[in-house]
Amino acid sequence: MANRSEAPTAHPHGSSADPRLRGSWLARGKEGRFSLYLPRDGGVVRWTENAGGGWSGPVPIGGGSGGLLPGLSAGQGADGYVHLVALRSVAGGDPDRVELVHTTQYQTGRPALEWRSITHPNGAAHQWTGTPSVTVDGIGRAYVFCRNGGGGISVRAQKDAGGWHPWWDLLGSKTDPLPVAVTNGSGFVELYSSHAAGLVRYVQRESGAKPLREELLPAPVTMGTMAAVRGPSGHVTAFYLDKEGRVCAWSPERASAPVPLGEAVGEGPLSVVRCSADGLDHTLLAQRDSSGRLQFASYPAEREEGAELRWAPSGPAVQGPPVLTVDASGGVVAAALAPGGEPIVAGRAEGAGLLPGAWNRI
Image 1 (cartoon, rainbow, N blue to C red):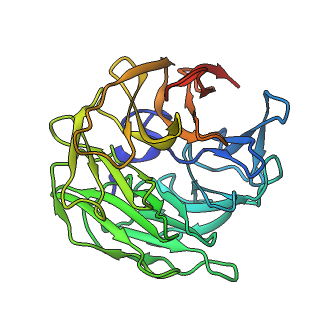
Image 2: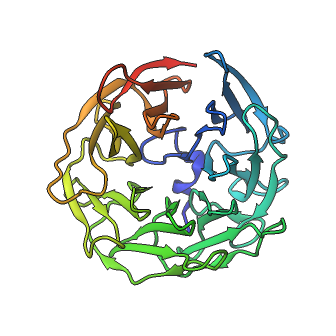
Image 3: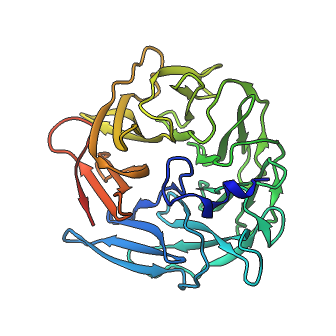
């Protein structure tokens, strides 16, 4: 179980040590417009990209119930629906006692459902154990992964006909409090995490089935640095920092061992997206450097052997890792928090290349 010093209230929002924004908190809807979600004043607010340009907001979503801790995890399905998960202090209890709550936005700019409790792997009033990760399977069911009180991983999945299955204990111990969930090209969910002794993957082999824990792969991993993306083959590649400060790629379905890609520019978490330039697929990585600025590096998608990361800066200093996604043409769109906590967004740059363009407050 996490101790009090690890609790979310002990860290500044967006710090590199505890990235409280996880997943697709910048999401593109079916009609091509973006929504951006942030925790604020005990709730979550949303900005919406306007059809003619510019943004509207912020507006509170999920019923404005209050009591939410300053963090947010998001996942978006192929249907465009955005699933949001937050932590909420349990009414009348100790401040460290929390439950997970969930809401869904079905259409850009429209109201989201009210926040509903999905409890906690160890009960409805358990101490904080880690930041959840959310992904959505191929037929639109959300899966919420969270480290549990025993240090392993638990998941709660939506049912076909509504409601949720009970929490499933996926076993494990001493796992990373920041697991990374992703959906592969077959529409099955996978979870990537680390352990003091190496890497671990949890894999769903049938639609709707409980993900299974695979054998731990010994590797020197820096906890809290992982990111993952689905590649053009449909297989997933996870990225992390090793103990020597190198960025490594791990794709269990494509290679037997992780591949070092080059030196990192910082010590905190990575962000990753699959994008295109000149009609070619690329993997784009981002990380904050020691000055707080974002640095970006890319290589041809799923061609790790022989790749060498070359980092280039973009934008001002920011709080915490960015979120990376793509526009309708496959170009990079990025969002981050400025030092004052306000969101800034950058779209595709003019001309060739993969770096995002000018950063603007919304």
